[in-house]
Image (cartoon, rainbow, N blue to C red; front, side, top):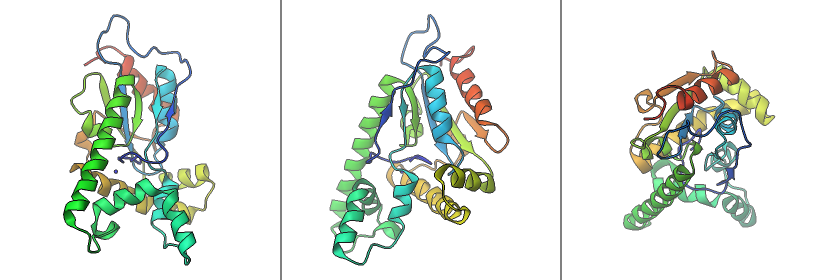
Length: 243
């Protein structure tokens, strides 16, 4: 749902207060809500590093994705052979397991469960994520994933950014940053890009990979991290930025 990408609330729900930066959170004389930047990325496009630096420059909080790449990868593996191993794996990513269960189909199915119960679970997940995103928006800052792009589509002083790059660049970058093999990063890329889109489509009925949902699309194969940060910060703080 994420991240990489749009996801409801999860075990990695954390806020990182940004250190004081060279830019102010709001332009002098501008009243209204604090600025918000929503980020959605194709796996490995650099949302975490770019988002944290943007938040620092704006002196506003950074709100990471609900689910990490490691959690999504773990949910894609077969469970361990013993009941104890299965329980440990499920407990480590319980929130994500609940999302997959509510999504049904290839992610969990209903397995005889009453469909009404499944729909109620989905409504609960959506309500919890909605509340989290709107609470974050009141504080201003950078929100990665969590379907914030669609939830805050009509919010003033909000910039919606899609980060992308060619697959090979994204895979190589992810492998280096996570300290994993190229093949493992490639498997993560294939699964995670699909899972995060499916979450958003299932729970919110929108396609986070569609460019028309964004104010800005940045290709980090062509732009350095510093250039991407500068572009976002300028869009938030520069002339005509308050909307």
